[in-house]
Length: 88
Image (cartoon, rainbow, N blue to C red):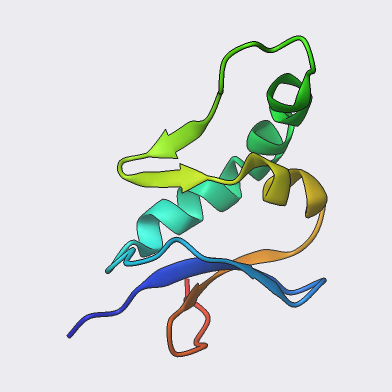
């Protein structure tokens, strides 16, 4: 059975959707584990002196660095398309 995964901020009740991240719980856990490092890239991505489009990708999914920066130090958890949180 298909089950797509995303990252949910329990602090703000906001979800970062990946679109068809079927059975990608492990990817969501790795991204959450490294959320501070991802958020730390925001100044590079937002620098007006950057002449090229910079982005971070995991396979075919673009990682929204700005979302991670906005949710720095918040409680992030994997959530499936049915609204269930991943269990450890």
